[in-house]
Image 1: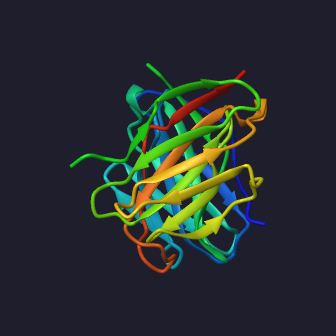
Image 2 (image 1 turned 90 degrees about the vertical axis):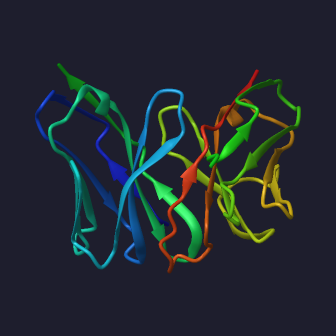
Length: 112
Length: 116
């Protein structure tokens, strides 16, 4: 079945760039997403990329997709303390159109 | 416009009981999906409903059921609760059901269910 893997933790200093990585197994994935979750809250959609693209930039966020290696990354430029949260990678597509498969999240800690 | 609303926000039940969770999608959205998020893990897909029909089901036992009403709101029911059902239950709404469209899902804040 589909699987999405992420590293569990990342710590950076305020003002540095953060790069969160994700790998997935479903070669028929259509869309790939990045969500942010703060304590006690639901998921906030940050950005997404269609599978026929290799890069998407949205303000401080840059998504890179290597479809051959099934590798997705999220770069956050000029990371701020307010960016501290759990970041989830997710993919949609394949045989069950209504289903998104999520990784277990990367906890980003931004130190002042 | 209101986002996705879920009720209740918190719930405490005992083993063997039944629970009903409610979700109202964003106005105009016809698709509702339910996810279970156990502490420390990512959300796991339970169901998707579109136009009041089940369009997808995850790997959950038959104790889990759901339905969607004519106004597109949805209920998730869980029978014979187990300790392992303790989790954050998230509802997401979107405009379309097909993977071929730009289907952005918008999540509610969830219902935190504790089973004692």
